Image (cartoon, rainbow, N blue to C red; front, side, top):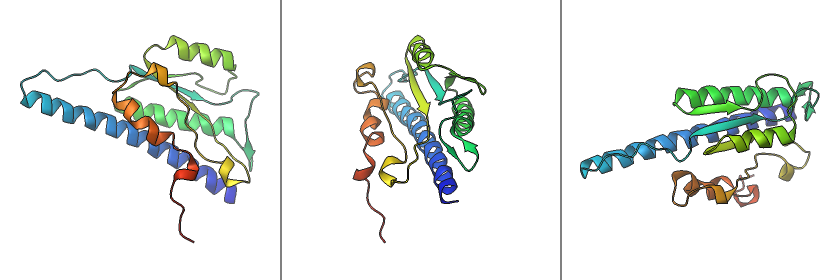
Length: 171
């Protein structure tokens, strides 16, 4: 039961993080456009990336972690579909490495990501261990692919902080 609660909490945290990122991204662009219009300059309509590639981890014969009969591959696909709908409602183009319960090799996932030019790649997994330090959300990114000064780059340090740097809840 405790593990199921952790999984639900992890999914909620991931969805909240992505929703916050999308909200900040679009509101920051609106503020820039208003400021530029007041100076008589045309607003910039470009985004820091063209699309988002969603990679629901595992699939097919690769079930990933399992807890209480729930397979990681099913959770990752569910979260990816929810994020896909959320991004679509904001007008952001998305691609998914798998649409159903099918196996996609790591090489095929990497090739898919590399074909999607000017995109960000989000691979969704659920970490779980009896040790709290080995559970939670991880963020990896290729810094050399991000233009300096972009809205996305300014948020990367926030999302890549190790869990140990966050404040500890009071007992």
